[in-house]
Image (cartoon, rainbow, N blue to C red; front, side):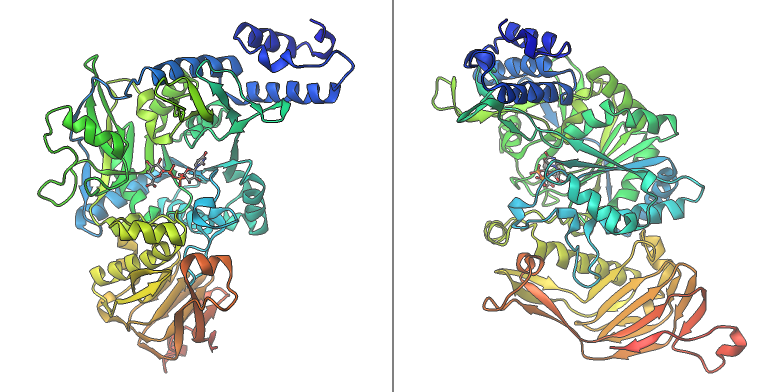
Length: 612
Ligand code: UGB
């Protein structure tokens, strides 16, 4: 009461509610009016912000915390009473006729798609100080993740035809927001219209100091509440509270595709997954990977709920084995005769049906399946070792859907084709590899792009030599010819087949080939060295009868005694460009390279070649 005059009219009900919800400790150590007024104002401002940033407000946060903390104390298992079975979904072989058919369906469906990139996480686990979407996907082209994603969406937009500009939302956080904005602005949005892109900034939530959901004050500062990230599940609440999803639906969006910050290969699988969603009308479709039993990724399972309803959802790997054993799977989480777990691996790349998604968010206010994970001091499960907070994960969205929802998955059987994220530092990656797990490092992320491109070329009929095993940062991985092409050149497998007469293409084991240009056609190429091709959108270039032999590019393991950049350190190598044939066509026109003797008759010009 003594501080009533300090409160604005808006703050009064909030403070009253907080007192009613047992949060008196926030104000109990306040000195008398007139003392530390600016510190008190800071706390009041922060409370207002926490109230505004949580869908439902701070009191709802405290109520949700009390409920979840009580469940946690009683040891309730999130899947208690649920009976698991193998879910239904589509399994596709990368590059097969069926895969191409679904890619084509997906391209059509993408006319009515919007895209969401969750990029609020920092690269601490990776040993990188910048934002992860600014990292080069591979050093051959040097394109960063954000550029690859945006070019993929623009390529889909161009392929789908029509006048629609496909929208992209990027979820950022306090850690990544300013740098994401700067990356877009410094690079002219990588070709997108700025109006196509919406940044949604996630905010941190209040920490809780005990099982009664008392908000935790900073140690040594009774005027500040501790905060921590709420998790990537925030993306649902943000799409709801900003009204963005509703606007998209109003503008005709039917599908919303989500992806993570560092998987450069996601668009090798996403068009097919969009096609599967469109064909089967899935409310939610997870692009998934074959999962080895006990691998440390969640498994997607179909669960019979105690109320008889059905839920198809990711079950984290530590919960899957006990859940299976408790339900008659005597051996728990084991491979079947395909050599993989029957439960596909979750990789958090999701396609949601926009109208049922919007209805679910309306129903839940976007707060879906929060959980709390306190580290208890002892078995009484009362005191915490350190403060905790509520968290949420985007893949838990099916909890927000009705039991009748149509939830499935799309697995690309070739695990390398659509998933190789860059998550782990060199030391953690080496430890994972030693344990027989995928290393998911900057090294494997880059080498897997070359591998996928070479595999696709081989499947199309090209002769691709290699690979050669190499050791970088203590990981022994296959180094394939360094092939990189822009999504405008080829987004789908059919594009690649249309652009390359693969039977007449040969790459030596150390070849490097970088292609930028929507209208480049390779009729025949024998490459033993390095070739880069840059053709402007209006330049139509045909490569026909080209034989390249030059010193090319060397991928050298880093010398620990020499200076290297962070980008080089996390991959363990650098590229030494000795000699490159560079073909550059910045102007409109029709070109053939090498120039034919009768070029003038064909009305084509040859220019733009330089050897550097
Ligand atoms: N992210 C945010 O945008 N905000 C946040 O608060 C946190 C993260 P991580 P994680 O690919 O195999 C996920 O840290 O959470 C973004 C799935 O939960 O890279 O450990 C962040 O920027 C797991 O089931 O991954 O694990 C990034 O883009 C499995 O699928 C994304 O969220 C695993 O990914 C993921 O964050 C996987």
